Amino acid sequence: MEMKAIVNALAALAQDSRLAIYRTLVQAGPAGLPAGKISEITGIPPSSLSFHLKELAHADMANSRQDGRFVIYTANFSTMNALIGYLTENCCGGNPCTPASSPCCTPTEETPS
Image (tube, rainbow, N blue to C red):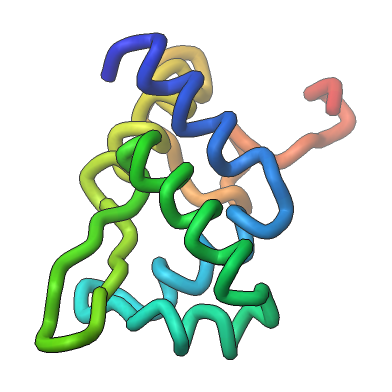
């Protein structure tokens, strides 16, 4: 993932409404959700929701598809995984990341937090 795309993705998520929308889309999985349902779940009015969905799509964090008269929105899982991969690629001194409960990633008396 290029640095500009990483910055765009992080910027898109660095707003509370967009982060709530994105988390909702991730929870919905590949099936996605129509805009009305996203609005209902998040409590974001439809007029604001369309702006935030556009910003997520512009950052390649969300996709949309037409399904009859509805537009279904989904999280772009490949971008999400690439972003997570970028953020963790040098974790634990270049070793593969392990769960947060492992000694490598859990602060101890010997490891400064």
